[in-house]
Length: 445
Image 1 (cartoon, rainbow, N blue to C red):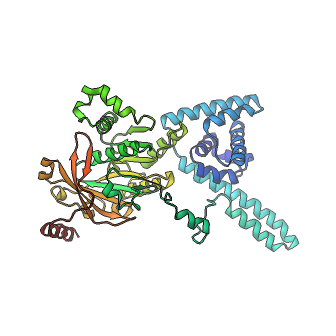
Image 2 (image 1 turned 30 degrees about the vertical axis):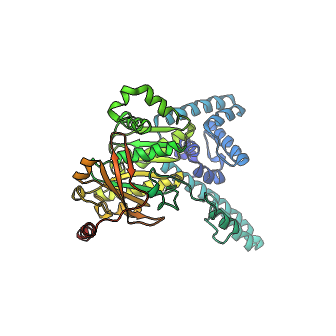
Image 3 (image 1 turned 90 degrees about the vertical axis):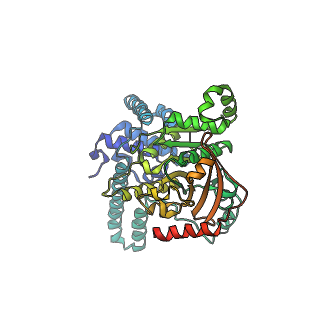
């Protein structure tokens, strides 16, 4: 196979979609693609424009800029077809209609790498006559390296690298709503980017309220938030934000809509997008596509909230539910790294822990390995007595970037989606209660 045209016109179209949607892939493929391997003229012209733009500005043009560049196509027929193509792409973005993108990326990179290696080997064969062995080795080596990520990693002993990691703002993070908890998260900074942060609680104990409060806190601090809900509707989730921002109970916000608007409007310079998906209908791929769509429309979130991961669809079906859940959490953490944001979600605790004073990692339902993937786990326990008195407890069983094992008493106001830590320091349970906690851990083990 000598041409990408042998994969078909649709494949070439999806290749351009992939380049516009994924800047990292664009960097890899633009370096090695031979435009002559594209046999559809308007596809080839679009790729030529994108490649020239990338060479000049070192990044992929936006869709609007591609539309502007199309004017420079000399062939009127190709120019018209290119305009139709970009209009169709925009429509696909709005409808989230992107299928088989991963397959197209893999196939394209594989094809282009093989073609470049063939050219290098043919050139090397010619050079054998002149015994230029060192040059032959260099030509083949450079060909093999083409199309791969150029970032080899962090040079630890580099002085600039050292100075960079000593900066106060080197860790990109968004504070939690709870100052005592922030003290132990990433040197006091809160939820770090490229990490997965999980809230653990039983049914009806406040997981969704915790996530809303974290989103509201990020908005108040000037960050942009994408909130995905797989349980509540977009409307109910938005109303919970109304309650949190306005400090007016959920069932009364509509009675004071003018006051609510005045209170939330002070944060209007920031952005919050709430997107609803039916339970078990959205995978990480679905959310990645939606994030790419928002990026094309100028919205890049600083924090992603998913309510909640246990209700997501795995990328591939597996024989047991626990393996599916593990893959969902692995994919979420990968997404946090790719988008350079903190991802906050929640996980269901087992029924046995419904009236526990402290919920440990052993209470994670279905798949314990979810805990291994997560960077931070904060559980919230609420006994029947706690619920009656509007109280509860945070416990931090896992914290990669700080101390763990801390317990905090909290006040819980679900009518306003607000949870407040009591005091500035963690608490110590009474001796008999500590023994109960340890007995529970041993029993679960």
